[in-house]
Image (tube, rainbow, N blue to C red):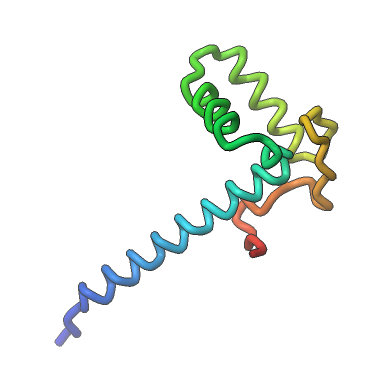
Length: 101
């Protein structure tokens, strides 16, 4: 005879995993803001820039941002406002690596 499934514990485990993933995403986004030097901006300015980027419909502009972001993650030269120091590996832990707290 099969053992009955404990749906409550499975749902709790899934909810815990979702919470961990959300917390990791927030940490990774914070690390990205810091690494790009955007942490020197006022919160209002940063929010406005992100809202403009999210509402962007110009494919050429979006492609330019994508190329610049890819160059940043590969450790190539980028012209951010504060000129942050490059990561030793050229990437942030956004690719599945563990984020440091």
